[in-house]
Amino acid sequence: MPKPQARYACQQCGAVAPKWTGRCEACGAWNSLVEEVPRSGPPKGLARQSSRRGGPAIDFVALRGETAGPPRRQTGIAELDRVCGGGLVPGSTILVGGDPGIGKSTLLLQAAAALAAGGGAVAYITGEEAIDQIRLRADRLGVADRPVGLAAASSVRDIVDSLDSADAPDLVVIDSIQTMYLDTLDSAPGTVSQVRGAAQELIGLAKRRGFVVVLVGHVTKEGLIAGPRVLEHMVDTVLYFEGERGHQFRILRAVKNRYGATDEIGVFEMSDRGLVEVPNPSALFLADRQEPGGEPGSPEEAGGRTAGAAVFAGIEGTRPVLVEVQALVAPSLLGTPRRAVVGWDSTRLAMITAVLDARCGLSVGANDIYLNIAGGLRIVEPAADLAVAAALVSALTETPFPADTVVFGEIGLSGRVRPVGHTEARLKEAAKLGFTEAWVPARPVGRRGSSGEGLTTTAIGHLSELVARLSPPHRRIGSSGARRVAVAP
Image (cartoon, rainbow, N blue to C red; front, side, top):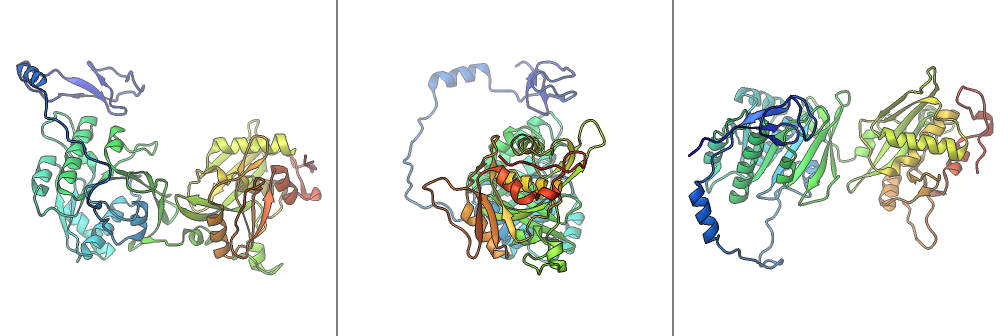
């Protein structure tokens, strides 16, 4: 039998080349090809004989089964269960990615301890740390007395042999998948073939024995999970753990979920005792903002009426979240104005700036613009357009945005404000936090809308109406500080 020839696999895209080259022909990455020796297949005669004989027939069944699906298992952490769609589904595989040191191991150790405290059997297998390091973290989190089985192993064959039994645990945590290796592959751990092969073995074992496998994945400098993209297709759920080092809270976001809604988030606060759940993230993101509705001239009223800040009523998954959009507009000293955006799409900011200039007669684009979503949350929905425009106009004209008002809506290139979904949930969340007014898109004729209890809604049909509300004639300024009157169409 001839010896299998070596091949070279790209560690970025998984493309295979017959010989080594400095640059991958598929994705263009440099120095990403690694030599791999494929496993030898069956003899040619056996393969030819199997193809002639054919395989066994496949049995087809109806869509509706006689028995109900397996019940979800609660981890004891409500935010994690919420992101997973209501709990963990037996036999499923979850991939958790995030920046180094963001708290992935802390979260999973807390979840494993909470599930073990509720009577579940849990196995925590690490390939990066020693047992003593895990015990130190457990002591810091106060969960050292929970019946969690710890093991330090990297061989997938050893892990499968240990778990492939009738008394398999309910939850298995693998930290991390990049450290696992198959002894049947002649490549280093973390390569494309090792990550793909190790994940396939663990996923097959989870389906066969009916327990939940949680895989921890490293991320690249672009923020994506390292390794082949096929890994995200193989698993059932993909979770990203996000957050800024300078902020104390973390966001657990679902980008794929076969058993629940995507784009669902869970909010945690990092403390010296580990991660603490935040049941009301709106109050956390607005913690440094004074309560709306203060008396005129009082510190509460002055603190809530800062120029360049507007409260946006957004939706993350199925959860309404209120965040503060902060903007600073300053005269530019350079030929090309500076743009600094944190927590939002910089391309969409350029579009909003162009619409303000072309449709509303303002000179916003000639200034330096700094935009920030307070609290470290990243906003991706277009409903934040109107809040961003409100913050920009408020900063440009030095007119404070009303402290007891929230705003949301999508802006078109014509300047028209388009309606967005989940209006009722946004308004109810704003009313619950004490806001009394909302600037919302104008509803089309014949469509009924709803508002939160005790909340007054003001319809904004065109961006010029927002500019007119925030731009008193004696306070409008242009690009170089000269006073300018913006004429609304």
